[in-house]
Amino acid sequence: MEQRKRGRKRLGNRKRYHNVMLRFNDTEYDKLRIICESFDLDFSERGVISPLLRRLVLHNESDEKDMLPDTSNLAYHINKIGNNINQLVKLAHHKNLRSPNSSLQNEIRKTHELLCTLIENTM
Image (tube, rainbow, N blue to C red; front, side):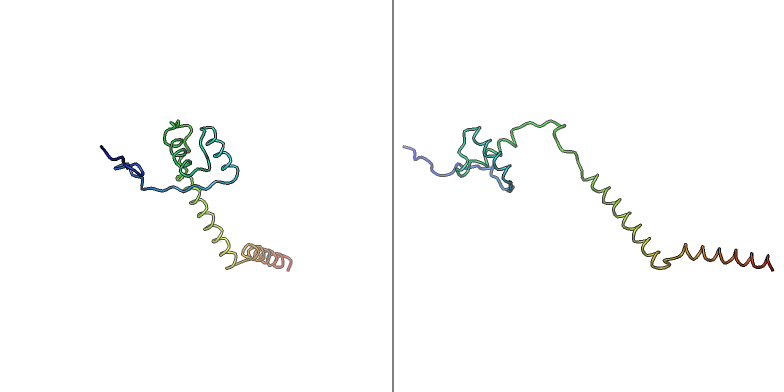
């Protein structure tokens, strides 16, 4: 007579090595509870949620339109624009510290030249 094997079923080459941890807020957790109840599963029982989520995620076929777009390229370009803006602001700030009234000094110089020519013409 064969002895009955006890314990957990052996997975063999299908053993799961990768962990994914999920955190839910209260409303998401309530939705998860409702989904479990719709499948007639005991939500409080240990080892129920993982197989349910695995089944929902892996066995649902998703269309390409449902997939999120690749935003890494967009984020890269936005980051580059931000770097350019920071460089421009730093350059403008540096020039302002080096000669804060450079445009005002040019206006004063032009006014001085005009006054000199006016004084020469009147003399």
